[in-house]
Structure formats: C-alpha cells, structure tokens
Length: 357
Figure 1 (spheres, rainbow, N blue to C red):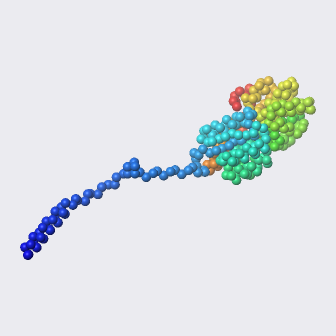
Figure 2: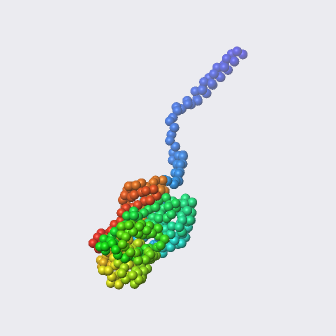
Figure 3: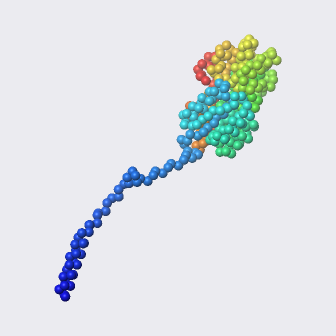
C-alpha cells in the first residue's frame, strides 16, 4: 500500500514540473508605441477671432456727404485702397445728393448689415445724431471724417487740416492777389448745415474782422448744395446784383469751378478774383485761362485712407497718437478726439500739373 502511494506522489510531481515548464516566460516591458494615424486624437479647433484681435477682416463702411463728385471719388479710392492694404472689408456708400435724410436711411441699413465701424461725413450733424447713437448702441465704432459730427457721437473726428489755419488761408490769399484789403467779396458754400464749411467760414470772418476790417461782404453766404452748376447760376446772380464785386471765396470743391465758369462767361476774368477749395485735375482749364486764380486743398484720397486706418486702430484696441506716422498718409496731429491730417497744398497755373487727383 505504501509502495502504491509513493508511486502516485512521484507521478504527480513529474506532471507538475512538466506543466510549469510549458508556461511561457513573461515578455520584457516595451516602450509605448506612438498611435497610428487611425488612433490620433482629433486636433482642437481654433478659437474664433475676437474683438480687438489683429488680422480680422473688419467690416468698415465709409460714407461721404454724397457720391459722384471728383473730391469724394478720390476719397473713395483712398478708402478702398486702405481696405485692400490692410485686409479689411470696406464699402463706400453715400447719397447722390447732399441729403442728410438719405444718409440716415443708409446708416439704418448699415446697422442691420452688422458692420463693425462707420466713418461718416454728415450733411447735417444734428439730423444724424440719433442714428449715430443707435449705431453706437449696436456696438459699432463711429468716427466722422471730412466734416464733423456732434463730438459725443464719435470716437475720433478725422479732419483734413487745422481749421484756423485753413480759414485764414482764404483771406490772406485773396488780399495778396487783390493787392489791397478793402474790396467787396461774396462767399459761396456747399450746404448751410455742413459743419466743416461753416467752421472755416466763421473762423475766417472773425479773422478778417480783426486783420482786414475794410473788407466788405456783400451778402450772406450763398449755398450751392455741393453743385458746380448751381454755383455757376448763383455767381451769375451775384454778378448781376453786385456789379462792383471783386472777390469770390468758394467753399466746397465744386463752388470755385462754377464761379470761375460764370466769370469766364461774363468776360470778367480781369475784374473778379476767384479762390477756394478745388481738386487740381478739375482746376487746370480754369487756372490756365485765369478765371480761377488759386486753388487749395489736401489730397482727398489720403483722407479716405486715414479714416479707414483710424477705424481699424480703434477696432483693434489701439489709440491714435500725436505725431504718429500713418502709412500712405504721413504724420498726423492728435488732440483728444481731433485728428488732423496735415497742411493743405496750394496750386496755381504753374504747379497744378504737379498734382494728380
């Protein structure tokens, strides 16, 4: 019996050893493998662009007093070029006449379009004030350019020139050309509610009152609705009503050209001096024959460019600074909300072809 038990134990031990030897050894630990293309985690989507970030294609609307006249055509080129240079979505829209009511309607539409910024040249600051406030409430950055809006309605007011300097230029040049300071003169303006034109005229009249007290303004400023044809007709009326009229000051670019045409037609080139704001390309024929004695202005294409540049700076959280160098414009002056592009250029028969706008 014992012999059988011993044999059984021996058999069990042999079987156990055989089973143990048949188990494979544990493999050595390996470095983790990089996931294959099929097992990579999906890339995290980029955050959408936010207000204040650079590189966004901001939607900026630039609205002149009206479209279709050379001055604002040149401004349009500058504004659209700025959009191209800076990767912005710029649209240039305005009424066909200097009409504040039409501007209000168009701004309402722009608000509904969801623009980011509006640069506007108001025909009537008071009339536009409610809709500009509405634009601000909708989160739209509002600036004015060319002519000021109510200061509380805008972040910046983009001015062409220093108002006082430009106002004085009219009278200083007229006196210089006349060779005396006791002539009779008339003022042709664009619209009676245009803040920039009224500012230059008012400042000029104050300046003349002190420096040239013997000058005689024959009548109140005469509006022409920014129309060269109406300026021509109004000048004919002035010539008929005031035969001793010697000087005409034209404010807004169509007015000196309309006045010059009337002076030419009446053969009064040697009797009446015409000076004022003009674009050089449209002044050539009148300067050549002497019906226009002098023109002065700034480059309106640069003004359009500056307006868009300023809007982009505000949208991206930056402030404009005094003496700042603006691409394609030059150094600007900044005093609070007031931004001044620079001094005007003056053209005569001799140098008008040096300018091209």
